[in-house]
Amino acid sequence: MNTIAQRLAQIQARIRQAEQRYRREPGSVKLLAVSKTRPLADLQTLQALGQRCFAENYLQDALPKIAELGEQVEWHFIGPLQSNKTRPVAEHFHWLHSLERLKIARRLNQQRPADLPPLNVCIQVNISADPNKSGLAPEAIEPLAHEIAALPQLRLRGLMALPQRETLFERQRRPFRKLHELYQGLCQSGFKLDTLSMGMTNDLEAAIAEGSTLVRIGAGLFGPRK
Ligand SMILES: *Cc1c(COP(=O)(O)O)cnc(C)c1O
Image (cartoon, rainbow, N blue to C red):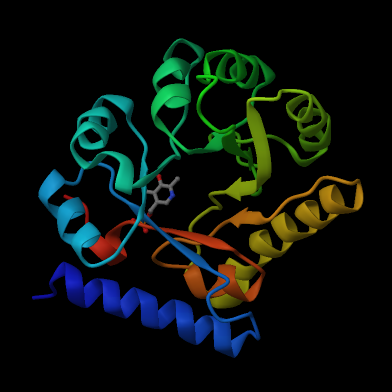
């Protein structure tokens, strides 16, 4: 049976090998531990091994963990966010990866405490154009990016996508390549971005090949979800 320490070493090795293989700068891909539904003890184990960035999808699940692990951790919110639930994200998280509505952006900007640095945000893109999936259509990204740029308590860092599951490597790469192109388009329009949030346990190599700067890993670190 794999322990969390063994899984962490395996994921770190996969990231390092992919960086090398696809000529990415060593250390340019950040590892985000997706700890949704996992018990606090597993997060503490990872934290003791040096993992600093954790991501959660559900607020009611996340807030007690944040209260326990506190300030040492960089907290990322990656789940769907309703407008009546923005305040705890504004107050307790460092990052939001799933921004897709101006109304939510405005509320977060208003609710972000003045003594905290701006909330880092990524716009989520529906890269597989799947009607059942969250995220903005490509043509809606730049207009939202301009609106976010006018909100002082938010800092737009990049784009995030959760493509359709694929098993073949070449098919995994396609949506990631598309997201990278959209990202480059924004950079050419003058946005100062540094984050492409793409890649999970099953497709992190394809994401790194296409320029991911941050992979979001759940099962690969904590084991299969029940
Ligand atoms: C659960 C989740 C992940 C992690 O997926 P794994 O396949 O367990 O690595 C990444 N991103 C989002 C948005 C998720 O909800």
